Image (cartoon, rainbow over all chains, first blue to last red; front, side, top):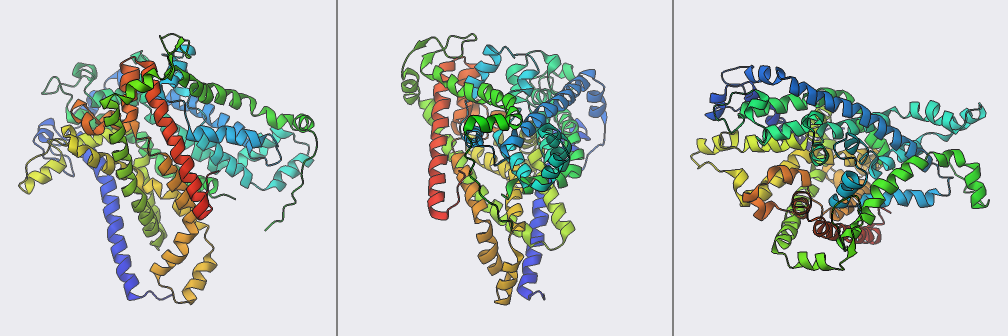
Length: 290
Length: 309
C-alpha cells in the first residue's frame, strides 16, 4: 500500500515521540552510571549530566572490596533459587487441575482463588500471622512462603495450560501415562514460555524485595541485597560499614549510593533482554483468552 | 473452529471425585496454602473488633465492637491519609490510563519490527527495577546537585528541594509511576491487538479508511474488552496505592500530601504497635476497594458486556 503524505508526517512524528520515550526511560540509568564513575567533588558541584567527570572506579573498589556486599548478594541469589522452585512449582501444580474443564469441583476452586485477587488480609493480620502465630520471624521462610502463589499467576498459567491441544494428552494417556506422567512429561515441557515468564516474574520479585525482609529479618547476616541497598540510600547505615570515606561523615556519598544501585540492578538488566521474548509470548498467550 | 460437545456429567459427585482423585490431589497443598496464607489473614481482621495484646493469638482477646472504627473516624490524620490516597490514585489513573492506550496505539503503528522490539524492550525495563532503586534514582535526579536542578539553575531559576516540599509530592509520584509503568502497561493491549482479525483491516481499507480511522474503528473496538478489564481493575485499585514507593519517598516533611492509608497503617501498626487500630483502618480500605471493583465490574458488564467474573 502506498503511504499517503499525511501518514508519512505521522510516522516522523511517531518516531520523534518514540525517541523521546526511549531517552527519558534510559536517562536515569545513564545518570546513575555517570555518577557512580565520577569523583565525589564533581558530583557535589552538580557537574554530572551524561558522562562521568574526573573518571574514577574508587567506589566500585570500595564496595566490591567489602565481603559484606557479597554476602547480601549471595543471600539474594539463594532466596531467588529456592523461592523460584517453591513458587513456580506450586503455581504449576495448582494451575494444572484448574485448567481442566471437566473437573466439577473447579466451580468452587476457581472462585476460591480469584477472590484473593480482590480482597486480602491486609498488612497487620498478615504480619501477626507470619511473625507471631507461625513464628517465621527472622527466618528466610517468611520471605519465600507467604507470597509464593499469587492468584494472578495461577490464572495466567491455567489459561496457558487450557490452550494446549487436548489431543497430545489423550495420546499420552493411550500410551499408558497416568496424570502425574502427563503433567511432568507432556504438559510441563510444552509450557516453556509460561514457565519462563513465571520464573522471571518470581526472580524479579525476590530480587527486588526489601519490604518483607525489613519486616521479618532482624539478623543482618540474612539480609538480601535490596534491603542493604535501601539502608545505603537512606544513609541508615554508617559510612564505616561500607568502608566509604565520605567528605561528609553523616551522609553516604552520592557516588557510593549510585554505585550500589548500579551493582544491584546489574543482573536484572543483563538477563532481562534475553528472557524478554519469553515473557512477552507468555503474557500474550496467558492473557488472551482462548 | 472445533465444535465441542457439551456432555453433562451426571455421575454422583463422590464418584466423580473418586474417578479424578489424582487430579484433585494436585490441589491439596496449594489449597492448604491458600487457607493459611490468604484466608487466615482475612479472618485475622477480626482483631479490628477485638483487642490484640501481642503474642501468637492472632484473633485477639476480648470484643470491643466498633471502638477502633470510631477512633479512626474521629482521627484527622486518617482523613488526611484518605484524601491523599484518593488524590494520588485518581490523578495517577487519569494520566496513566489514556497515555498507556495512546502509547500502545503508537507502538502498534511502528512498521519496522526491529525498532518496535527495541522501543518495547526499553520501555518494559523500568518495570523490572526494584522500587528501592526507583526511589533512589528519583532522589538523586531531584537532589540539589542533580540534573533537574542544574537545568533550573542554567535557565536562571532557583533550585528546588523537591523531596522535602509537600506540594511537589503528587507530581513526583505520578511521573515516577509513569516512568516505571507506562511501557509495561501496553503489553496486554499489544497482545489483544495481535489477535484482531486482519480481514477487518483489509475490509476497512477497501472502504477507504485512513490509518487514523483504522485505529479508531478497528483497533480500539477490537481491544475494548481488554480496555474495560484493565479499567475495572484500575478503579478497583483506587484505594490501593503504591505503598512501597511512598514509604521509600516520603518523609515527615511531606506527610501532608504523601501519607496514604497503607503508609498510615504501617506507621500505626508495625512501627507504633497499635495492631487492632491499624487493622481496622486496613479493613476499611480493603472493603472500599472490594466495593469499588464490584461496582465497576457490574457497570462494565451492563454497558460493554465485558466483566472480570
